[in-house]
Image (cartoon, rainbow, N blue to C red; front, side, top):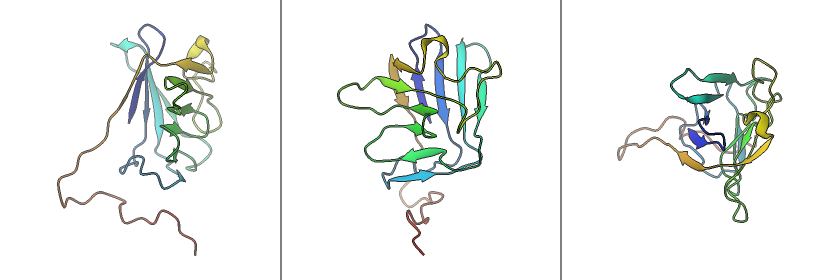
Amino acid sequence: MVVSKSPLADAHLVGCSRDHSLGWVGYGEARGSIAAFLFVYKRGLSELPTKLRKVGGPSLAQQDLPELGPSFGADSLVIPLEKSNPKLARSKLGSYYERFPGGGNTLFGKRGASVQLKDLKVFHGVYKEGEYIPFTDAEPFALY
């Protein structure tokens, strides 16, 4: 799960996927999930968030690229973590994750498709030594 505070005073953006149990392992693949979603707290944590579901099938729910930071869809929420601009975040909704009910096509509202984040927090699971981690037996590239 990725949590970032947007440049808006009280807006919190949250990118989440239900089956990204290994996190970003750097295999260089696009991971699919029909259960993936993004959600946004527009007015702080006092109101329920807006949930944006994955659309267009399961493909490209997240990109697991070692040279790229958190990325949901090709363009729905991308935080490249580039050395030259580490706080850059981009968002364009509609192709991989649904748009807002009013038709808004970016997670950042009127600020546009690209913003500078105030901060970024990435949460991940912690497993005990020897504990089974789901999907760890999956082959990163099946070239049969």
